[in-house]
Length: 245
Length: 226
Figure 1 (cartoon, rainbow over the protein chains, first blue to last red):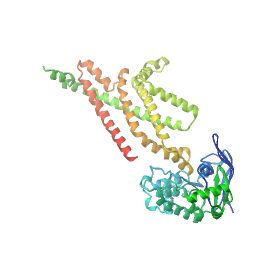
Figure 2: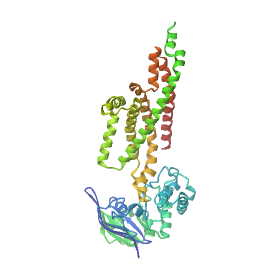
Figure 3: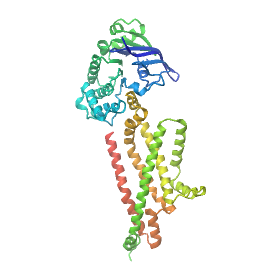
Figure 4: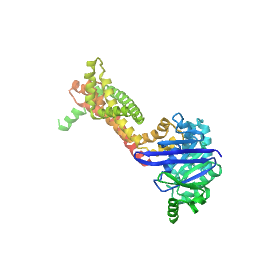
């Protein structure tokens, strides 16, 4: 089983704050790893270390065989292989949906405008928004915006997709459409790391659930193991808490 | 002669106006030329400084901030006089036209740098992160994602500031630039009648009134779209 992501001993300090305290995380091809934990546990920071949006203080991160912390690595090239989706969508408001998806195809992947538009339309079709290509983000619902953001990432054909609380900013009735797209993506064999509170999705789509607290991975295992019979007290407390709500 | 007639005779003297109309028209051309040079060079220099500042080199930024604050605090007239009468002492003798252009361009550069900088920093961090996460470089993100949004925000304040500074072309009259006010005042001393000043005021209105209206229109339009 080939590893797409291999993070070893990742530490991250923000000034005096020690946010990640030696985290190991590996993700295999076609694997969906789901990261849960209380807010402030470092799960988003971990995700952002995987594409170097945050520079880890120490440790190593290898994605698709490329050491992304090596200063000699062309990080812009490496990031093409690592798609990322953000809680607040972060679409470019001055461009159409297609413009959002096509920008990196042209500027980073070096496609012509015609090729980029064609690949962009295909990516929008994959998230069910072929008919919204000409719309500006302001004219789309939150769920549609997040699907455009997913299209923007998958258009570059990444080896792994990182999702940072992709449904947290959505109205409840729009969550389903985004999770549906993520499920399709998973079925197509995309390796994924998902930080989210959608426990239902974790149960039936994740291969592995990782529970983080205070900057360390407390426990990891299959969804059934983590949700039904957690071994650690902290995991039990957290699972109990979210299930009560 | 009634006082009304005397007023008209003094400020709206048709004969005097007809005689000096070509002079004022020439002054208008010089003003337009000067204004265009000031606007283009001032705004481009301001944008260049803002882009340079965004690279985040500490020493460079200290210099930029100092220069910008300097030219924001000096009255344009002082800079004009300094360049026109001061530089010849170091063997550089710019003409009145060049002195006025340089001074106003430097002032516009300083103000527009601040406006562009404010625009760039007001773009949410998430825009940078989203673009960088797709592999766009810093420069590509700045040019394709951040700047187009920032410039949109800067257009209304920039238009207003540009109008305010460009009107300063009238200061060129102090260093013998034959722009509108300069032509009008020499016509006044030649004709012993202030009517050319009325013409000059009319010429300024023709040039700047449309700009002011455009500024207002841009301001309301941008506000709706956001």
